[in-house]
Image 1 (cartoon, rainbow, N blue to C red):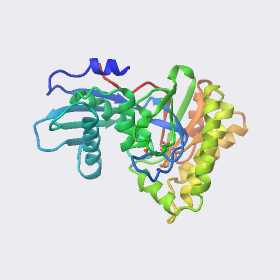
Image 2 (cartoon, rainbow, N blue to C red; image 1 turned 60 degrees about the vertical axis):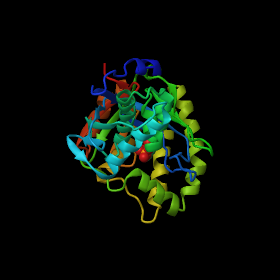
Image 3 (cartoon, protein in one colour; image 1 turned 90 degrees about the vertical axis):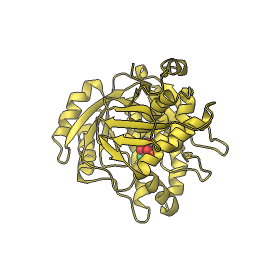
Image 4 (cartoon, rainbow, N blue to C red; image 1 turned 45 degrees about the vertical axis):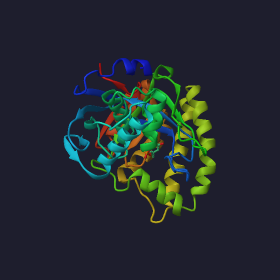
Length: 342
Ligand code: PMV
C-alpha cells in the first residue's frame, strides 16, 4: 500500500482500534554488526525476502492510562519489550508534525510462529507496530519514514515494511534517515520457496543486539566479515535480480556461515545452533548432491530456512520432516508489504 493509502485508512476517532499485519523476512545476505555512529545503522549491506506464510498481527488503541501498555501473545510485557514500543511511538510522534503530549497507546501483538527464536519476529513485530502506531496516532508518515524509524529500533524491521526483495544499505555518517529499499516485488520471483525447519521452541539465549556488540568488540574475525559482506551482498543481489537459485543458494549459504563463524569467534563464543541445525545442514547438502535444488540459511537462532523452488517444495519438506531434530516445517514464499487490515 502507498503512504497515501495508509493515510486514507487512518482512524478518525481516537479510541478506534487499528490492526496491522507484517511478515518477517529472511536475510539472504546477512546484516551483523552496527556502526559506531549510533542510530542503529548497519555496518554491512543486507538483502532479504519478506515471507508470506508467517505473520505478526498488531492492534493499537489510544489509551487514557498513564503509560503505554504492550501485550505480546496474550501476556503483558514490561521492561525492554515494552520500552521499545514506547521508543517507537515517541520516534513517530517527534518525526511527525503532531505537537503536544503524545497520547498513550495500548498495543496487543501476536505471532503465528515462535517469538524471539531466530524467526525474525522482531522484524515483523516492529514493522507491524510502525504501521499500527502511525494509524492510531494519526502521524501520517510515509512508508520510507516508517521503515527508517522501525530500522532505528530493529534494523531488520526496516526491511519488513516492504514486500518482496528488500535491501538495507550499510549506514554512513549522517545517515540517520536511512530506510530500507524495495528492490523487487514478490511477483518478481513467485516460485521461490523458503521452507523453515523449526528445531526448538522458546526464546534464544542471546538477543541479536547483544550478540552483534559482543562480536564487534571481541571477535578477531569481525574485520574479515566487514570486508567480505559487501561482496557477498553483490553476489546475492545479482542472483536475486536474475532469479537464479543455483547462484543465489551458494552465496546465501556463504553469507550465513561467514556471519556465524564470526560470531563463534567472539569471546565468549556465540552458538545459535543446536544438533537439529547441524543435522539439517548436513541433510540438505546430501540431498543437493543427489540432485535436489535446496540451500540453507540461518539467522541468530537454531532454525534453518531452506531456499528452493515450488517444484521441489514437497521433496524439501519430506527431507526436513525425516531429519532428526526437526520439530515441524513452515512453508513460506515471497510476501507483501506491512499494511493495515481493511
Ligand atoms: O535487526 P535485528 O536485531 O533483528 O538483527 C537481525 C540479524 C540477523 O537476523 C541475524 C540477520 C539479518 O540481516 O536479518
